[in-house]
Amino acid sequence: MKFFALKCEEAVDHEALENLPEIQIFDARAVAGEEHIAFAIAQAQRAFSNSCNISHNKQIEVLIRASAQHQINVAIDRLGVDNTRDVVVIAEMFPEEFIRQYKCRECKKVLEITPEKLDYLKKLFNITERELEAAGAGSFDERREAIKNIIIERIALLNL
Image (cartoon, rainbow, N blue to C red; front, side, top):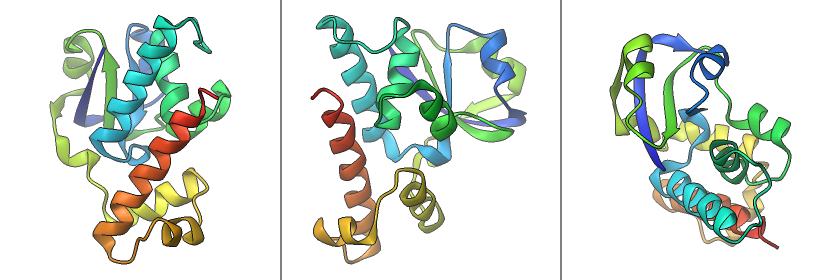
């Protein structure tokens, strides 16, 4: 399973999933960099290998893991698309049909954590200033690393 960071000319919403069930689509604002999504994919694959998966669908399992909690509805609310142009697609193969339909191009920049995205991630994942401070985050670069690490830690804790 792979991920593709995309910038699309056409806005993407939940209907895209209905038309293309072989992929999963995340709002890129809710993804804390490549490490976040790569770890979620690895944890989902591991869950299937160890028969401890939460969902019967591998792409939904990635969604659950990336959301760092067990509830599918919360995962969809947290990471789902709603008329966004910056997305992350999870698929077994390059999502040509999706890219053609929504006029997308690969763009790793949508994964970068900006100051605005950092604030969005804090709210989305309920991460407090106290948690960031405990992780030794002072400068913006330290805060960016800390928020990624906190989210990854929460994903790892799903296995407990």
